[in-house]
Length: 228
Image (cartoon, rainbow, N blue to C red):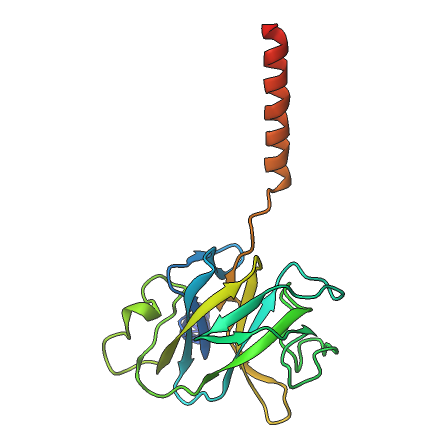
């Protein structure tokens, strides 16, 4: 009985461990960004930065969506994004991809899942095809980042990373997702939401911060009153 139990445990471990170390088909990373473990997102506050798109070998026609934050469906976006010098200022409200009716959400079965971002004003750019250039790693684990080059050795999952120069015009947050499409325009492969990247908008004080600020002002007022 003990042997059966032991073999069962080993079988489960063999199934679980490889998937835990699997490298995603697509990844995103900002040069100089910090990884927010709570939201599982690369975050930067800069308006100009390098965006890295990492793809496994053989993945083609990768699209990157850029979604604006802080704009409702009736708002007119007052921001634009430059990608390698090309300006993207025309945005569509809804759910990516653009090729599959952004106005209709299909519960994540054929559209990109909302993950708290969509619907929003967004646009896309083509990040190209990815060949076998070097050995890849997981950029969220801290042991490898695209800017430092490929991992040594010839085994493991291989692919390519590409760098895009991004400039955000206007005081907007921009959320980035990467994905590929099927022939019918539905989403095929996508970067796990733990590998997203986001340029944050202007900082907004949290309620607790505002409360402390208010208490501080009240305390300062009492101090002046007692000094009188």
